[in-house]
Amino acid sequence: MEQYEKLYLYKRIVQAKLFIDNHFAEDIDLDNIADQAHFSKYHFIRLFKSIYGKTPHNYLIKVRIENAKLLLSKGGSVLDVSLTLGFESPTSFTAMFKKLVGKTPSVFQNEQKTKRRAISLNPLSAVPNCFAETHGWIK
Amino acid sequence: MITKVTHMCVYVLNQDSAFDFYVNKLGFKVHTDAPMGEGARWLTVTPPDQPELEITLFLMKEGGMFDSETVKTMTQLIKKGTFGAAVMTCNDLLATYEELKSKGVVFKKPPTKEFYGYEALFVDDSGNWFSLSQMNP
Image (cartoon, rainbow over all chains, first blue to last red; front, side, top):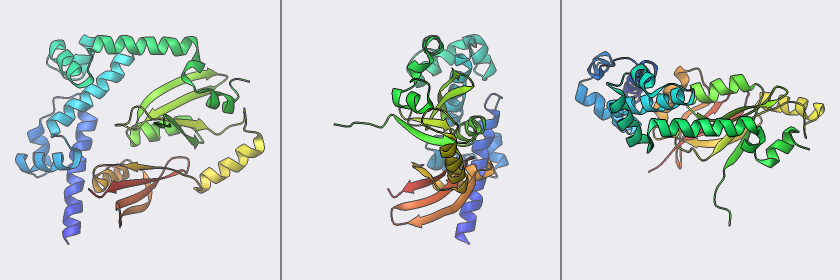
């Protein structure tokens, strides 16, 4: 019985995590997520952190920053990316990005551009020789 | 002195489908996704917390050292589930199991107590199986 209760609990926390994964760009109200999962806010945060190692709020920020990396890599401007991901301003986005990634969004974006350009000029530069030979890409 | 593993290889039967499985279901990050000409593609992903380990999703097709007979044999073996590709770890197996199941990942062994912790086995979209473990503290 205890095992079933634990499984039920896990399913609810996992659903909350997936909700964040799928709605990270929206104005997510973590109180509301806790309510939907039928937890008190305190209990929800404690359980979420015990499973994922982060509070729901910090997890949401992490998901937003990971998605910011993807959008920046595709050429999105800092302003657009910050607005798309629900940050209050480009300044707060840049500060959070730098805190978590260790460099500003612009620096990150330039690095990605340089990497892409190097690969497009010489695709084999990204491939260890042994794999290139295995594929038949070099003789 | 050997210090690290930087690349490992998983043979897959379809790179688009493998991309979806490893990135959208397992949550891996794309490291490099580059066209190599003539329809070939160099696709590598990294585990979320291990950006230095590139897993190459290596398409099983004719070319290089793979002749048609080898490709046919390998394809059959991959589909059959012959190859165990790696052991992965997570902080909380039960939660990870529930999440992956909800995304459609197929498990051939549910979380089970082992002497070293808990283990489950899942299968990728090609047929390769992986151990997913939560080690004892």
